[in-house]
Length: 282
Ligand code: AMP
Image (cartoon, rainbow, N blue to C red):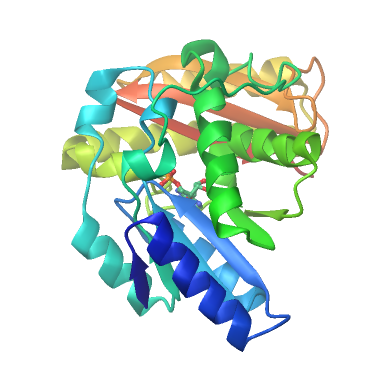
């Protein structure tokens, strides 16, 4: 696996590869590092679908609305490199903040048509502007044919897909399933910030959402589904930020559930903020 630590190194590897392999497809998996099996599932899916897999490890300051959250974000670069290499990633790009934002302040703006005003957007001011800014910049540098994103960040996939359309970019966004621990807890870099006890407590999130989906499958309406999810959630000790059942396309809350709906949740387990979601189906 090649490692590029600045834009020149990235461009060199890319142009060499393209020169020697005309017509080959490039797949891209952007990450913020502290890699785990969830990230690796994206690398594996990319490997199955494209010729050359590039990942990036960049903790993007622009998408953090609290400095404390940015400061405590886990950083595990040497383990990340080992994991990527053992999962047959071809190139990892590990830029500095200056590589990505050479002019420091940016006047980036994008109309996300309100997709950024709900759920995460309500609680994390300008988070999605930061996400779109870095993803667009990374797409510009890497020029992938396909980009792989996890459904774990459900709203992010919707917004990046919208951004790609809005900007007319020639990259196809591929959304990949959520990887979970055996306990049901969605894998996340933030999980390593929790104690074993907290990780156990955090399983109440998936337990409550899964039960709600079962209640829907049993033919019950939205009120009963939400009641079930909340009653299970509050058996635990987590603090709920939001629990919303939304339409997959508009991300707006629904009054009736159908198979194009997802329940999305954000909750604090101690000081660690976790998100998760389950798609409804029956
Ligand atoms: P992050 O490093 O948290 O920015 O995540 C990088 C990519 O990995 C994003 O597309 C995430 O949605 C995806 N990802 C993170 N956790 C998981 C998971 N448990 N299952 C599937 N994809 C994930």
